[in-house]
Image (cartoon, rainbow, N blue to C red; front, side):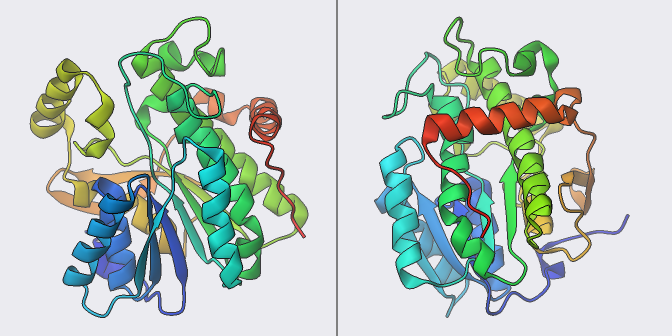
Length: 308
């Protein structure tokens, strides 16, 4: 495969994109490169101050970029509804939604404002609710695309338990909770594609895993976990944040992306290549599990998807 970089992005003029978790890490790189390619980008993040600062860095890097910062707390369904309401007021079609934000390895079990286990609540349920509330704007676009960022650990059966006890009510383990939320991301993205196909709408849903990079994702982890992450990512298996963002950028813009596909980094560290299809975790191929997760997510978030 050949070397692939953000310079390969098709031009994005006229497209409106929303990137969650855009105040740092992979999300910020994704937003910058989409803006550099000509897209209008909404940077969404929990901290209004941090996302405004990220918007400032973006406009400094890409003079003249069309960008705005919006507060969005995925741990609070009222914040999700308010964010979607602000976008809906404009009536502007939404061409691209990148569900990138996430939390990882929180040392003790915590809950969102709506009572969900925090990792599963932010990584899956918050994005499920956000996508559903933005669906009317996505369906106004000629070729809408939703990119959901998962992680390689989603395939670790020892961690995920095939979504047994998804909110860690019986027993909480930080990385197991994270793995389950990332498996849920894949199941959601594929079920979203199946439902779009059944409804006859031209929406493309793609899921990626970015490899390993030390970003703001590890900020909630214990000190030991953060230290080990730096060692493992920096010296053994990791990539830069810029390299880790390539699968998201490819999934968001490439013309040959497969609807419902799952992509991972291509090449080796220091020599990035075109992101490539990844092998689905066994549980992610379970259509009944995906449908059950969808129904449960609707019931918990009170967000139903309307396709017309």
